[in-house]
Image (cartoon, rainbow, N blue to C red; front, side):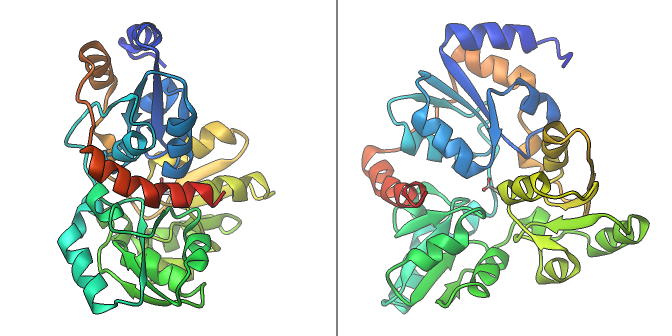
Length: 300
Ligand code: CIZ
């Protein structure tokens, strides 16, 4: 790692008693400087258990909000404040209330990619890693799911629940280039294609396995296959390459989230120097959202 700011970031992070958390979709230089790299569930758990005083969250806004919800006594920094998630913003609390009025017997499960206000109205959150278990654990036969239509459809096919799904999408995943995936399959006939459930059903059909990012890591760890075509945000290719240097990983489907690429070392350094931008929520909203997040983390 040869970025000119890295040494200063390390020194300052130590002085500030800060931990740097990075999502697996972050650029390589950010993954390399982080104390922990993972998916939003793993990073939420790190945020809840760390004894650091400051959490520098290298990801997008809903993730930093989740860290704040779980660790309100810590200072949570998001180095670039406009690193948002259009999927999370695709449903407002008012729109979710509308769905809840239409389906009064349904419990609500929301993807962790949602705003705190939406989480606050929900029975539980889920991530792609635990979505099926969370939805199965809900004490009703009917479930409202938001905001990702593809993930919701994926879950609906794997549970016995009647699901009412919001029609949101992750632009990067839902526009995954299927032809690119198929071309790579032809070029690498021995490779396995792993795709994320936020991609379209056509991508699932073309894939060997449909998995969230932690599921991809588990799968590769227990597989003897040498080459994998990775149908999720391309930062995951670097994550897998660092974990499994003896395997080959190729980005499939041209899936790139621009918001995930906004944080750079210089923004991490600025954030540590100034201790801002701080992510904070009104205590009432935070506590209401916390119930849904904790229900998910408690599931194991
Ligand atoms: O849960 C996450 O971190 C996301 C956004 C994707 C995944 O599959 O891990």
